[in-house]
Figure 1 (cartoon, rainbow, N blue to C red):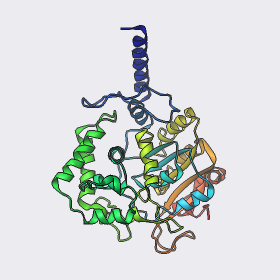
Figure 2 (cartoon, rainbow, N blue to C red):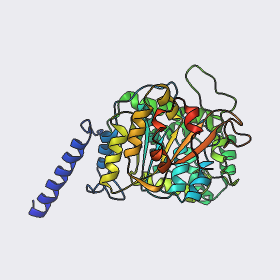
Figure 3 (cartoon, rainbow, N blue to C red):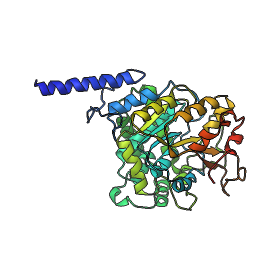
Figure 4 (tube, rainbow, N blue to C red):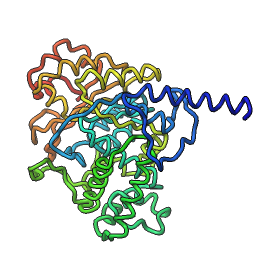
Length: 389
């Protein structure tokens, strides 16, 4: 063994040990996991190795908690309306923090952040995002992504379908029959991928990922948001509707509407910069740890997508702690909070005709400057307080 080779091995061992110490639990790699393809890079790099990705997930995550829904898709039909405001305010780059499933990707595609943290109190949401990560890794374009996501046979001419309209993709998925072979292949390919991401996944974790995937496959574009023991509300959009939704200019604007938007998210996923997190936004760990990572990267927050999580925090008396964490996050002049209001049509001055939900954008500067915001008594009081018109 040469001195140079010995030095490289020593550096790799030291880097691996540092990555493990940065996490909250030891790294246990699956037996069939792929070896890292790059040496450890600094935290501020524009890509992370698999080891760094796994260590970062553990470093910023908590043990998790319970919520009464699988939350497979959003129930916010108005989810694309903030994009117009983000454009007007010039919100671009920086770091993104969001909650929930794939509605985050549409905001990410528009903002093009340098890193994204997707957090949820449920560990299942982390598993859900490993499913998405695997799908992005396999898919060359939007049609292949939807085919593998919904278990449809991948068309033989997939490269020629790169620029087809999203309406055509959804129509194709709706009329194309699932076969047992195509469904099993999609599930098998995802399982093989998620085992490569450096995270210790139990048999139960893998079963949860497969259950989520097979639900998408079984219901396809007709899937709706459901809560445990409750049927979907009639105003909940279907998956197909979410994929074809429009922003306030009338343009179809989901991350699946155009190849360019899809590729923005795919690039971040490929570079291990979409980081799923298990954590409580009001807890002592999650946001402070993410803030520490941002400072190490010399990065600032651009978007905090809170959906309606603040509603639950206010009800549970934990909003003041959350507000203190948010105020301490490194931010830029254009930083914003995006939240969702479920008050029904006409229930807010910013409500849009035909939509049950309302999306609201507040600048981080106004949130920080409002000394009384942490004492709000209801979510309605919060959403009526300040928003970008």
